[in-house]
Length: 135
Ligand SMILES: [Zn+2]
Ligand SMILES: [Zn+2]
Image (cartoon, rainbow, N blue to C red):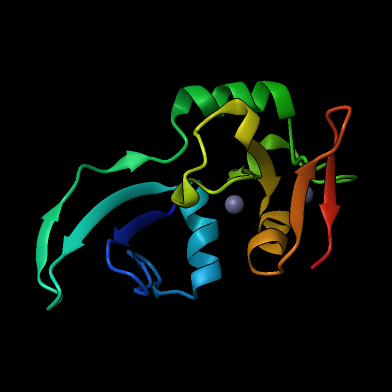
């Protein structure tokens, strides 16, 4: 089950999760990588203006292709199988990153957390390998 994330379109406002209430920004960003998302727009007083249709941030077709390509966590040296992974945007979709195979990798929960909450970075190296860089 992917987290159901409600993204509130107001700057500096943490998102609300159906099951967890408010979460820190780094955690919200991690969950936003691969979730069911509904957008809610608020006016400046915080009144809900509208709620959009819920959608998967990683559509099933992309997920299938990722599983075929990555087979498991792409963190260097990790061998966790794909069943334990989430999709991760190397360039976060909230910052304009494309929903594409080149921009998305599978990561186990531990390594996904290391990137978002731990401040590590994962970048493509020449030759098509991923390199993990400490904060
Ligand atoms: Zn991520
Ligand atoms: Zn891993």
